[in-house]
Amino acid sequence: MSDSVVLDPVDLEILRLLQNDARMTYRELASAVGLAASTCLDRVSRLRRGGVILGQVLRVDPARLGRPLEALLSVQVRPHRSELIGPFVERVRALPQARALFHLTGPDDYLVHVAVAGPAALQRLVLEEFTARREVARVETRLIFGRWECGPVLPPAPSESGSAVEGGGVVPQR
Image (cartoon, rainbow, N blue to C red; front, side):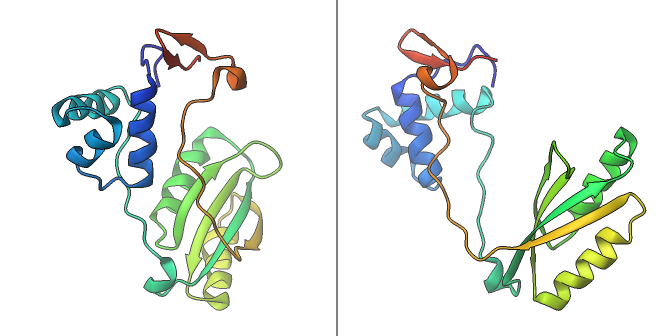
């Protein structure tokens, strides 16, 4: 997000509401924040242009699609060189079992969230798609027993991050 994006309380409420239900109509959203629908549409468009709103996501239940077992794979890559990062990331992203991929600091280089049909499928995935790769030094697997969504992402309060308050809106600092 650029420093020039000013978020006032109405913008923050729009973001909160859309993160809880991205299928809201502009009429419903406008009514909830006390704006005309056209003004609300303009604000959402500005948030999109400013890179605050990146898109909408459809969530699915992996278990309903035959992938009831979810796990986190901590992956250590050696050597950890830039020319290996791109191909590794693209390979993992292409796996139908992969749900999310994070590049990390610390002893592990990547954290991969996967959903599979069962323990045998998880074992095959780890052995055939990860440890069989020359650059993968280690994989540690953790099963996911439960998952909870958290609240919407909003800018930190000025007291949290040192953000400056400008014109009544929060201007995130770089």
